[in-house]
Image 1 (cartoon, rainbow, N blue to C red):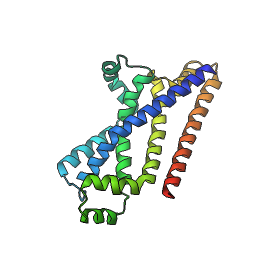
Image 2: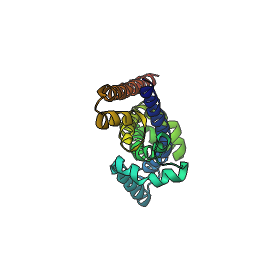
Image 3: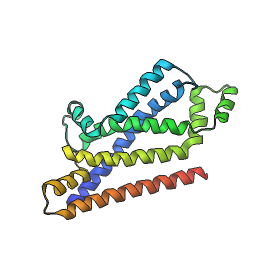
Image 4: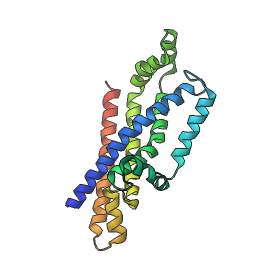
Length: 213
């Protein structure tokens, strides 16, 4: 029981920290994509092409390989390449492009008429972003980030394959290497499923509340 509780806390820690960092990294990327895209607030084909390509490349990079590639980075930043804290680095980098795309798509759902009205009144792009786009699309953003968190939970489970800790590590150790304790495997799977359901419920709840505010 102590092992499962520790693994659950490790997973929650990894997911929350990685989500926060991924949003911090992904939000500026989303804004750049939104502004510089054709027809955007500040169209720039060269910048858009570069950032769009980078986002697509990192989104398609297999996470387990990305973790291996980033082992030297973890060693350089925190002095170790395995463990719960070290896993946050590849989790964040893997999730950031996905978060960027989610935020970009959510912001694009804003009513173009509101954007044009704000521009006609002399609002600059940052004013439009913070006073029009974000308030208008907050429920969609909440749902998008919820989807991102669920993806990160899945990534965190895969991280257990190479010493990332958490519930994924317990599931792999007891499901693959120690066949004598299947309850540990299924207990880990159940906790991951419950965690996903809780995150989805919270995301849906917040989205509905903000949508009706």
